[in-house]
Amino acid sequence: MEILRDYGNGLVVPKDELTPLERNKLMSEGKEVDRIQCCLDTGETMAPLIGCSLKEYYHSAEKMLELEEYLYETFHGDGAGLSTTLRGMAEAMGAEIAYYDNNIAQLKTPAIKGFKNIDQAKLVDVDKDGRLPIILKGLRMVKEKLGDKVPVSGTVTGPFTIAAMVLGTEWLLMGMLKCPDKIKQLLDVIVENNNRYIQRMIDLEVGIGFADPVSSTALISVEQYREFSLPYFKKNVDFIKKQGRGCGLHICGTSRGLWEDLNTTGIGLFGLDNVESIEEAKNVLGPHMAIQGNVPPVDVMKMGTPLEVIASAKECIKQGHDCKGGFVLTSGCQMPIGTPEANMHALIDAARIYGRYPINIE
Image 1: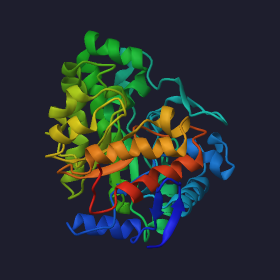
Image 2: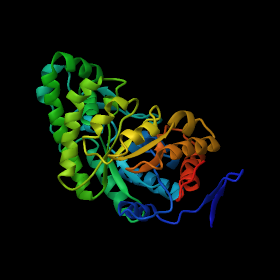
Image 3: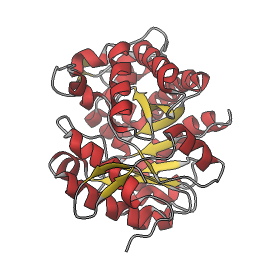
């Protein structure tokens, strides 16, 4: 067995036997592979690894490609890809976004001011509006450069979270109570905009994922989710599935109250925040989909040591490896700026040590 790294105390890391693309293909065919999959939840927060400011990264397809190449060649995770980021679609719809060199972008001015102006919600041209053309160019470049080695995917934002960026979160929450029909009108426009972008991803033959943090039960009730988020998310999922494709979803924060509803959506994977239990998700969601998670991104991935990362990942693997729908090791959310590269190595190394088939964790 060829050794990749040695952490001491018997923690020897065996070298992978398959490329990520080979591993993914065999798993999709129900065949044996060397280990569980492990993906790094990265994106713009990792731009400093290539000496790039976040502001530059957001506006350069070439920098997006450079970062994905660096991440793959350095860590050999099981996925590569680009996100519209939480505010990308809202910006294309007219929101003003503030960009910073050393921090993630923030909403500066919503696209729509007040409920009476919801009628003006914009249908986007994904080839012209905002940063969407830049991201699509970058995604095309990543697919061309890395697609023969690793599965490539794109992430879009869930309709409800986009509405929060188009209208402002406080206005959205108020609008659900004061003018629900107007909010639903806005959400229908957003669904169409998402579908236009999703079609480009389907044409590029990349995987599709959603990020929908504002749908967390930390912000809205289950009843509000069922009325204002779920139906519109399902419209995007149905659009994907009608074309023979699948998709995944990540909701930051608490989501347990939504799991039974998620089982009805037809998604193929759900990403757990680290506040949720892999064991419980395996039992509730596992019969219907794969689950992924959920090493704490701040307390462990950024602030911990490599051995602490390995210990946390080991527990995730122990709880999730026998999930009926499948299990992917990753962090509970996007890793923050300043996450040590040694800890990123450790996360994937944990999959090589403890996720190697046949899995037997005492």
